[in-house]
Figure (cartoon, rainbow, N blue to C red):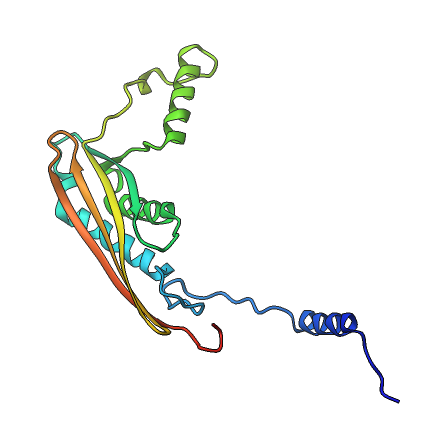
Length: 202
């Protein structure tokens, strides 16, 4: 006599086998190629880009050209993503700001011009002025203005033929003088990926 198992039972059995196999979790170097693949900006691109931009800006001398006893100030405005890669832009901007502060230290004023940062400053200043919280009288002053603003764009060029796809990325940053509109510094980061999609997986 032939035994027949309901399809539901087979599905449950397959699920249990998968569950027993468990998952594989391991730590990998963020500077290594991503094993997941894909023709997108990867962690090592973000790290390399931030390091290179910070070094180039620092070596240009633009942010260290203030008269003796003064500091140049700047803030990061935006990173416009015109590519097809839905990357979190803040991860790039935050990494660049961190690397710049590491390279330049207290010799440069890095200002927070985000909506959240300005709101926090306004609330704290108001609380100190009306006596709700204590504040150092010597620390009072005007909100600092920026000498320069750093902005960037992400562009991409995609080509595809059959299952083969290539993507060229160009990430450009510019440091603009906020008094004259002169672009005091500009730098590019380029990378290109090739990805082959399996016919079976389509």
